[in-house]
Amino acid sequence: MSAGLDLLHGLVLEDGRRWGEVAADFQRKDISAIFSPGRPNLHFITRPRGGSKTTDVAGVALSWLAAEASERARGYVVASNGDQAALLIDAAAGFVARTPELDGYITVENERLLAPNGASVRVLPASDSGSWGLLNVSLLICDEFAQWPSTRAARRVWTAIRSTVQKVPGCRLVVMTSAGEPSHWSYREVYLAALADPETWRVHEVPGPVPWQDPADLEALRRELMPSEYDRLVLNLWSESEDRAVSPEDYTACAIAARPSGIAPPGLKGGGWRSYGPREGVRYLVTADLGLVADATAIAVSHVEVTGSGSGRCLVVDHLERWQGSKAHRVQLRDVEERLAGLASEYNAAPVRIDPDQAQGLMQALNRRGGLHAEGFAFTTGSVGQIATALVRAFHDRTIEVPDNPELRSELLAVRLRDTGHGAPRLDHARSGHDDQAVVIGMAAHLLLSAGPGSTAAWLASMRRQLAERNEVPATRERQAFARAAGRITQRRRFEGGAHGVATCEHRWRRRPSGPTLCVLCGMVNENA
Image (cartoon, rainbow, N blue to C red; front, side, top):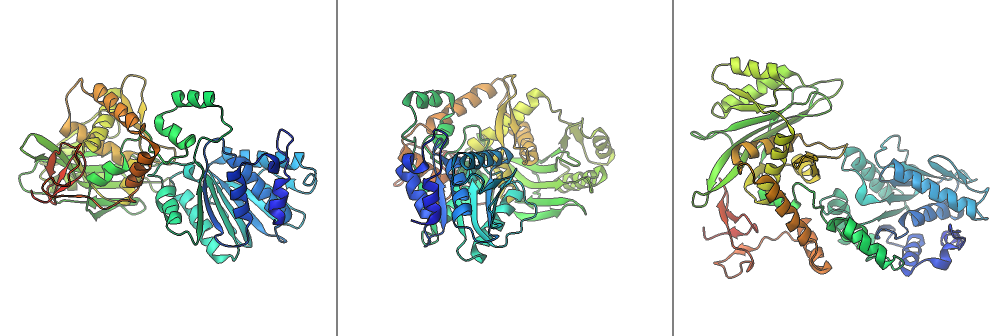
């Protein structure tokens, strides 16, 4: 037994017992593997809620620091946010206070643990990408990894961590988390890669619920939580949220090839993506959402294609553009005016719709130009709900095509549906995210594919019931569905005269403006059409 493992077994818990006296088999296996000197030295561990994640992370960090860390060695524990980082420090402080062997030996500071030989473990939130002096690092722990924000800062922190392991011989990396959503980058970019590389990674998924949880408490949780929340937190299954506006499957089915087109003005971030140029005789619509500093300016050019026998309609987003300003470089209304005028003129004098509260003067300036027409689209509780519903419905029914690009995918998969309290939904996003492109696409979907008044609430309620029911299937089928959602099963089944069709799908074929004919329900390709 290593010195660190031996010490961890002796840490005193809140009830006065030693960790080694009460640890479950899955805890012992994880800790033994982490302190093992051999390979693999990278660990991806998922546990259910109540699976002693925070306690064990604090115990690993303390035991390594007190028993194994060399002089001035460095360790880092990166938490999902500041509150989680504080919980880890509190857990470590509790161990130090209760364990006689550590009391007075380990110093606990606000965000750091110190040993007498100068070695330390620093606890930070994933959003803190500040001074990372990753020198002489021997231990790196990522806590609640699936809950890390989907921001560039958090991903830069992960890149720094992962690259450091390669540079420091013997460095241990531990990822400890509950299962998250398959669309999160931790699943797509890290978890799947770890599964595919058993020589480098040890992946251990603890099935839930944990044995010490009371059945009555679990039943209460099942009633209180959404099905996907129960799956992630209690059963430790990767599962998509029911309030997600766009699922990974729907985005994949609706995304079409695009090329970069349009560059943001100097000093601004962003640019455009284009799937189709203008075609003679087609009526286009330009929708815009204006943001000058914190929010971005987004512009979409769209039109409607008639599909199938003529009764179906598909919204095609031909061009999508986004500009992000800053305090140093604000988005200039003059630049927006010129870009809107240019796109509207290029796409057959398309009308422009924009929130009049944002840019009354901009609308007037566009209308003074010959051949252009701009109208207001007021953002009220009702219209915001119509935007949200139209966006969700178009992707859910797969009656939309959008330019495929990484930024749009990331935004759409992160957008959530929230209740306004007035019977209508709205689009929402994390503090670090944005939804401006989703808004302009939703505006176009509402204006060009409106299902008419009175149908919104009933349809949205029906969709949510379907999503909830979808998550009530057995765990084996859930795992297959989640695997498909994350792209682990990428081979699309081909349509072969119905011989291998999906028996439960009454195919609704839709021909794209360019490309194959697809079923809007299951995404199957009809090669005979």
